[in-house]
Length: 337
Image 1 (spheres, helix red, strand yellow):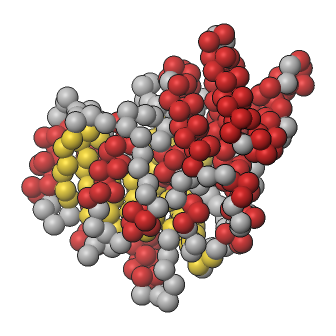
Image 2 (image 1 turned 120 degrees about the horizontal axis):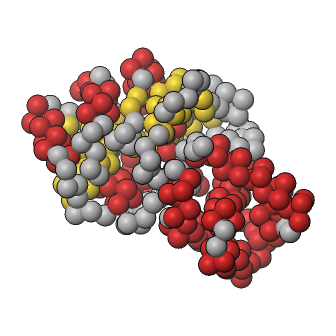
């Protein structure tokens, strides 16, 4: 059995997928690389097949009708044979030295007495044209180099576990029934949220492993693209609101973190609606908050009258100032300009 399965969702990725694959091949035979061609119309399928033929014991090429990023991740999970599972997007790559440390740590932990559910590492925003690279690290939020549970987590405002920072135990993803929606953007938020109540044991390795590229004009985290896809953001947020009644999660730290994640999702939807400047999107924002109120009054009260919720809904100068803060947090979350 392989130690780590890595899924690479690819859609018309011919221009950059080879850099991604080459960075992952450095993991050697301990790694299974699953290249998922999600109905591409360029040379993606040809490149994937060539790599699978050249490295038959490491690389699998999977071809499917276009189902979107979520369905490509689903295909990766279904076909994964490794003990652990990671998603690396086709325009991103990993740092070789950190990669070796990740594999060494996973190997050591599999021989230990406790079952590791989730390994966390840092990621770097590789923003095109930026003179300084911003690192998302968690050393003030999580214990370093030890197994810990939710009681040891101290996430501050603006700190979130994103897809780039997480490796899950593969069997856990099967056990929690994770199934990402088809033809929907921003499903990475579901990937890092829905499995969390099933996660008991975590480990934080303070290395800058994942390199997250930002700069393509059509990228899903481009601000104007996000405004144009606000319906997708709303759909993902509503799905996340429906997975659990977070007010009833028994562990206090986990409840706080998951509530905080829902808060930033509501803020992002609200900020994008306001930034769009259209009455139609403002109605969608209003409907989102009203649907939450009907679904879960206690959670609505917590989010609506929290700091960010007030900024998204209060009129006048005070509301605008809080909205600007919410927008800055949204920028930080997604890394766009």
